[in-house]
Each structure stands twice: as structure tokens, then as C-alpha cells.
Image (tube, rainbow, N blue to C red):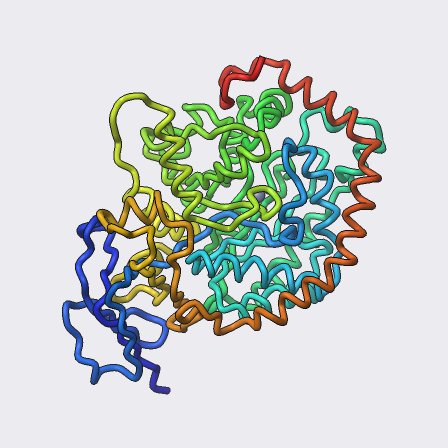
Length: 499
Ligand SMILES: [Zn+2]
């Protein structure tokens, strides 16, 4: 079969290794799903379709390296909630939902990503129950949207209540609400291997493994994850040190692993080049150095960590240790928006208030983290994250007529500091226009809006019932939360507390 060839002509091409402030104009030839050539002048005769791109910045598609599609419909429902309180509501609202709701929430999240120039999303999927039928619904929705997905259904054998320090001492009613039922290890691994066979990696579908968090997984579970990652050559994502309480959990429950969740993962064979730890707010400097030495990565989610009152990750310490970095946007009810532009800006601003000395200039660097760095988390940096021959044709055209570029003094700085997502004009994934001059080609947006509006009647009724029922647990969660903050953990990741 002869593949379709598209010529994108005359755009300014963002090259990580070129002039990141004033990118040179060039032509890009796309052959099927792949960039075939990038050159000052390519003959239009070589192409089936020619897209004029003068006045456009062509950048590699952004990658969202941490996200969960299961709570998209909770967007805007919560604020001022620390993580453990928020889990009380979002865990039940993501579980045991209808196929229609699972499809709609997946499409809405994918659509928002695409509108914000995200061409690949890592979905750490909270599917309850873990079963074929809704896995198919999720994969079909991603195919329909046309976004590239690195899909990793979350697995664990220790119940959700273990997320909270002191969770085991809560009264049974509060434990029940957080979730206190274990899961079978063999059933979950059978499920995963079954999905890898039913939906093999191809086109825009990629797989990853996601043990929920080290404290939610027994050594046997983590060892099985390490074996499976090796067997299928898969990346691994897991939540680590998101909250202050998790630092205490490490000290109190993992003393025989040096009081460190990183040591615990190492002892289970998981610390290595495939591993990406998500959040890492309450990580120590020696632990960051161990990750760097092992070529493991950190996926930062600064916006959600701040909104959920977890704290601020030590980004400059991570940078100085040379650990590889990625960026994510996390849950729609934790950050509320899937925007890597916001995540990039937050990275630079967090670094800025971490050191009063001038520099370093980080805009071009964070653009690397959000493209090549995030591709590396998924083991895909050889084919995603840059505009080069042989790379996948995952591209975003930014309209330089937008006021964010009036005047355009630096592509890198203005993408990071002034772009809101408003400039995203066209998005190509795997050689296919998914957003074409602001129109979504794949999803019927109007029909999706109607569908969501109809689903929300039932969803909001469930939300109100959940909020009401959780009242009984709140005083206990608050007491446990205050005990966490009364302890000294030997580091600080919070702004000075208001008096
Ligand atoms: Zn997460």
C-alpha cells in the first residue's frame, strides 16, 4: 500500500538543538505516520497534500506523562482539599461506572489534551473492575479521538487505605470509605497479559505498567511488575512520595528497607531505566541521586501537588542531581486542566523561587522535558518528541498571529511563559490531522457535549450521595492528617504556614 505524503511548507520549525528563540523556516515531508524529511525547500510534487504553514510555529507534539482518565467528570467539583480527603470522593466516583460514562470521560480528556497541543497522553487508568469490556471501551475511545496513548491500568494488592499514614488505625467506617479490600495478584497479571495480547502495541497504542504506589504493593507484586516489564519491554510508572504522610510511611513501615520507598523498590528489582516515579514531592537528596544513578526518572505534577496541598517538589535539586525529568498534568479533579503549557510554566516558576541567584534559563530546557523527556519516560524518545526524519509525525502548528506572539521575540520563552493553548491551531498525530485549523476532525464535539450533559444528571446525583455519606469519615481523616503534620520529617516542601 502506498502511504499518503503530506508537505507542511514554510513553517518555523522548533528544533531543540537549533535556534530555540528564532527557529528557521523549513518544509517538512511526512510519509504515512513518519517524518520523511525536514529541509529548507522540498518540492510540492513529492506530496499528495500541501499545507501552507507560514506564520506558524511547528513544534513537536507535547506529551502528558501523568494523567488519569477515570475522574474527568469530577472537573471543578473540588478545591482546598488535601489529597487524602480528595481521595474519599474521587475513588468511588471513578469506579463501577457505565460504559457510556467511561467512553465519554475518555473522549473528553483526550479532546482537552489535543486542544492543548498534547499528542501523547500517559493514562494511568483506574479501571474498576479490571475487565475486558471497559478496557475495550477506553481503547476504542482513544482510537476514535486519534490521540496517542501510553495506557497503564493501575494494579495493586494492598488496599487504598494504605495511601494514608495511620489509615489502618482509622475506625472501620473511614477505612471502608477509603477502600480496605485487597486485590489478587495473579488475577491482575493475567488481566494485563491478556490485554497485551488482545490489543498489541501498534499505531497510537502503547502499554506501560503502573503499580499504584510502592506502599500499595507487596514485594511479590513489585517483583512481578519488574519481571513483566522485562518480558514485554515496558516502562513503569508509580506514585511515590506525593505527600508528607508518605515520607512517614516510608520511615515507619519500610524500616528494613532503610526507611526509603526507593530502597524498597530497588530491593524488589524495580529500580532501573524503565522506572518513572510520579510526584516525588517528599523525596530526599540521596534518593534523587540514587534515581539519577539508576537512570530512573521523575514525572513532576507541580500543579496538582499544590492544589491538593501536598507541597512543592524540589525541582532545582532534581535538576542539579541530573535525574531525568518529565511533566504531567494529573487528574482533571486534581489540577482541573490538561495543559502542558501550564505545567512547563510552573516548572520554571518553581525553580525561580528556589534560588535567588540569576539563572538558569529554563524555557528551552523544560520544552525538552515536555517532549523528549516525557517520551523517554515511555521508552519512546527514539521516535517521539522532536521534528526529525524517522520520528513519528506528531506535530502541533501554533498560530504566530495570536497576541501571545505580538511581538515574537523568543519561540521557547513565549511557548512556556505566554502560550495558554489558545495558539494551538492544528494538531497532527501519527501523520493524521486530528485538529485541522481549529476544527476537530475525529470527534463530534457537539454530540459529545450532549452526551456528557445527559450523563451528568446521574453523575451529580451520585456525587451528592458520596459527599453526604463521607461526612462521617471527615473528623477521623482530619485527625490523622493533623498527626502527620505534627511530626518532623527532616525536610520541608511547603511554604511557611500562615500564623
Ligand atoms: Zn496520579
